[in-house]
Length: 542
Image (cartoon, rainbow, N blue to C red; front, top):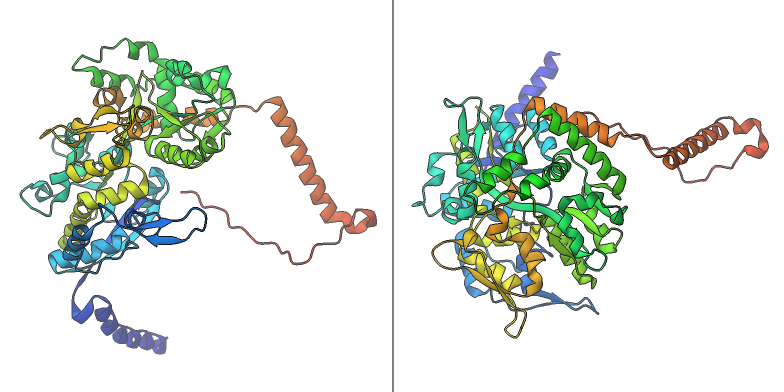
């Protein structure tokens, strides 16, 4: 035992110099920044990235790739990149995390190493934090930000982060006024706050935003039927041709809009309190409302093709379905993919209401976090908020950045602006998002009033009927989750029961044959060679 302890001690002594070498070149300190983000939610460089696609062109027949010139990624763009990051420009595009590490060293003279990991759902992220996993930055959605704050799991952002005179504070200098107004108005119930209330902007910096609506195929959907709003999901005409999201909050929102459609449409959009009234209705969760929503969801379930999380996009492109509940970023992806295959899809936000959502950067509470790490966390948000990088992320992800200003507007205009000879061109005013210092108007093809531009940047008037979903609190969450369990566990139709019973009988028969077939020669099959049983570990519950 003593020999073992001595060996461990000797190994530790030998390891210390190596740790010093690993911490940075020449003994320089390296700050470690642990970032937790959604899957595929940052520009990773290479083919499919903004820089690569701007500078390369692939022949559709031979698939030969050649370098081309770009009006945006030009010599000035490359020179600025090299000056800010201290590294040579790469026409294939580096990933933004690697770029940030170089930029941080150039700006602050300190090495930083980003430990980047991803999650699939807000609940996955929440569970990891509750289990004690440590992260310096995370990117939850708006309702999860509210939940984390209510449980005292977040640290507020530094006041210096909002100093617009600091040239490196790219977030506050470039964030859309539309977005920042939402963040400053949104209230949080914070468990460790003196007042009990704080604003979203105290704890979160926006990253991406969007709306919910319906992607539809105008060849198979009568556009006059869209006047039913969300209720089209129950319309027998489209039985088996529509999908909705396989999560309780989005589905609850849809059913809530159906339940209160008459009340919502009776509101006056010109009323200064219109959005507040829509938001109040779309966050109702009393027992009576929950019971009525459950009935509506049962009706929806019996009419739809199915619940989905990520397959709706491909089902729309393939023509399997005609209508799909979609987040706006996924809607843009579906429209782009369909367009490549000669299919035209549109996006519609029902007149009664739609959801306005955000994903934002927060700092999970950690009493052991150093000032250096905290500084790097704020710097990471600021680096992603540089307009050039916001463009890269928006292009790569497909969602809409919260960053406004000239550079982002020019990118949007370049993406969706009409050709000079387009006789269908209409003015599309986006001044509400990009700034009030001048008019920001895109001359866009008329079809974009229903397509990608509309999905990414709905007109200001349409945003007024969009409601942010609150964190409901534990009691209401439990009630609604129980509702969802019942909806997903509703008794199957008779035909489905027959199919399942037949499958079960077949499985049991196969098992008996494999188990006892050696006693009955004519039952016995010669096993296939080259196959073996692979043990699959059960998924551990969170």
